Image (tube, rainbow, N blue to C red; front, side, top):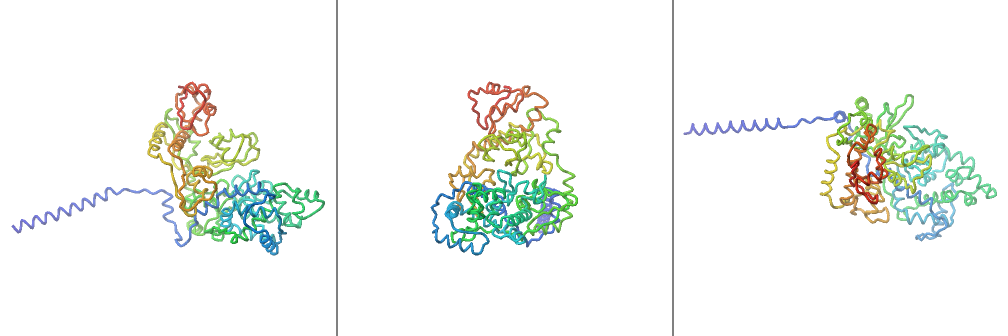
Amino acid sequence: MIVKKISIVVTAFFSMSMFAQDVAKTEVEIKPVVKISYLDSVKNTFKRDEMATRVDSLWMNELVSLDIYDDLTKDIQTINTDVTVDEELPTELLKQRLQAMNEKSPFDIEYNQGLENIIKSFLKNRKKSFSRLMALSEYYFPIFEDAFARQNVPLEIKYLAVVESALNPKAVSKMGATGLWQFMYGTGKQYALKIDSYVDERSDPLKATAAASEYMSKMFNIFGDWELVLASYNSGPGNVTKAIRRSGGKTKYWDIRNHLPKETQGYVPAFLATMYLFEYHKEHGINPQRAVVKNFETDTVQIKNQMSFKQIADLLDMPQSQIQLLNPSYKLNVVPFYQNEAHYLRLPKDKIATFVSNEDKIYDYVAYQSQNKTMPAQLALKVTPKAKAKQDKIIEPTDTDVKWYKVQKGDNLGTIAAKYNVTVPELKKWNNLKSNAVALGRNLKLKTDYDPVTKSFKELKSTIAVEKKSEEAIASADDKDKNNTHPQEYVVAAGDNLGSIAKKFGTTIAELKELNSLTSNNIGLGKTLVVAKAAPEIIEENVTTAIASNSSIDSFRKKATSTKNLGEDYYVKKGDSLYSISKKYPGVTISDIKKWNNIKDGDIKPGMKLKING
């Protein structure tokens, strides 16, 4: 009996042991093999400085936001110095403060009613903007002061960059003036600022400030008065000279002001009002937002081979927007490499440490990518064998950036829209255009995923896929929308503003304000914002996405065969009209589309399905 019990125990022990081995074996067998990309394998070998601080991305979004520039520029151009503004600031107290500023400044700062009106207008309408501008100033003002000190230019001129560009190096005026100091193309060339297909040094804070300093110094040698120097910076020395003659030879700004162009009449007072608000912000309850990085917390490294911002961002684990901010002079998001010419990349110091410590591996990765570069999307569409008529080639969109296009001779909104695969209404909306007329040389804002100039430098995030038909894509979008019948909402967090929230959700500040019935750009911490409408808006978005890729294929298919030989469906996109749709199909008229779809009055809506060739 004892022997029998022992044998049973031994048998059970061995069974448990074998079972444990089987389980272990099974675990080993089902463990997936994880393949890492070449990029990850390179980054895994990097030496990193864990003690270094990272640049705050929220602050970077604040720096690249253009809403302050738009608001401030409009204010300066439209403000009426003769209209009294109701704002609590005793005139006698203002006179005392202006006198105190005058005593420690080479500018002739004296009280007048027009200056008081502008100061009160800024206090009433732009307090929030100046709070944000003071955060930006912590990054840029040390650069300005260093350059001005070298040329013996008054340091107070740093406030002029606030008036000119709202401290945004990517600001571009309606006339094409660019950068922090708003240089026109000719003036930039005159002061040896490099402008070519890759680089625009008018947007380089260091070089543009040096050029502005040189200009100020030369103008002072001519006029001998700093207010007249500012006036000449705005309207040109010729207009200042004419104003001096018309005033009977007077040489003080306030004496010749009425003879200057209208914009210049408000320009110098706006500069002095800006100086006042920076000097007395505490007294008016303006609390500056603090910048989490200063210019001295960044450094530069000379680049030894051409590389894109995307490659740098991927390798250094940082947002591409940060690289764009710190290197605004590179127009195509590419750091070029020319023989016998140095190009530098500015980065936060911790990223510089990573870059320098792993320089050879970084250039090896860039060389590897150059050898294995994916074919540009539009070229791939031309050379790829055509699929069946109902198959759709879907390309994942590349990163969307705001781009600028300078209007050339013979251009019109229609040709520009077609070139960049956008619509005329979108172009008009992005550029605040009231009509279809556009001036030669004007810079137009474009929000597009494809730029024919830069396509050779952008890498596609995915290869061309033909597995899904356009109808299936739309059906899946419809199913998704059925589960999303409520508006999309977002709770405001610390550091948020309407510009950053709009960018995050792919909308605009105007749309956010309309959705939430906002009368200003101010939003409170913790406030719940509606960032997208209910299902119908989403349906339109998904339909547009599904059809956009289809329409790009059609543009090449139409060259080989007439559309009248193909029966297909077209889904109406935002901005479409019967005329624009008929233009997409050679030989098809508006009457044809109306007949095939029983349309009486020409009224079509986004998402509507139209039959082409019945």
